Length: 234
Image (cartoon, rainbow, N blue to C red; front, top):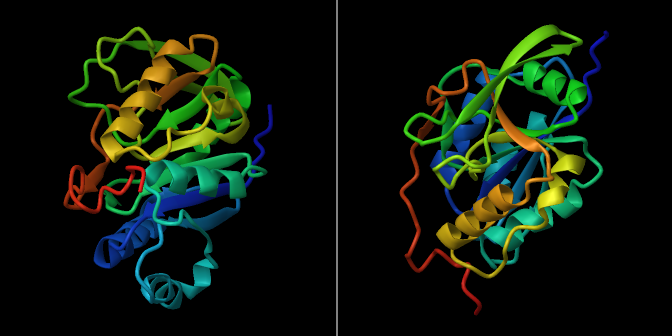
């Protein structure tokens, strides 16, 4: 079995976090390991004037595309980006304040989803601290046999799915529908996580063999419940 390397888009979800997003991008450049073509996209929720320009100027070689969520909160912002990227086979979704601390083996995540139609996403964030039931499997792929664990949707913890960094198969993941819109960030994530657990016929979310250990440093100050948690209807 040979291995193909389709395009992967790194989609960074952001609002007005210039020092943090720069660290996020630098860490991804160092630790995002993929043999195929990597594209870069910024899903920006109408940050102040000059914000995107500062990013594009410093990282001009990455040739970012971008979308604007209109200041309507996380759900609208990410849905807008996903609509723009709908033809891309794989998307690595990450927020602007997650700093990769170790190498991210994207080749293995893509190989797993290419070979196993029952997997729609691979979490790269690390799930330590969550009460999740894992099912160990081995998958033959173009890179050889891969050991992985899918997360049982009947796990005690809600977050089988998390907004934390993950690689998704664009078309299979659509089974879960769009993110809730015009709601605060915590509610948006929780409602979508409930949907993932409830939709048993949709494909599974998995982790790789080393996917339990925390792989990112979450450096951003939380805006949940603040005036900048702008998901509420205006």
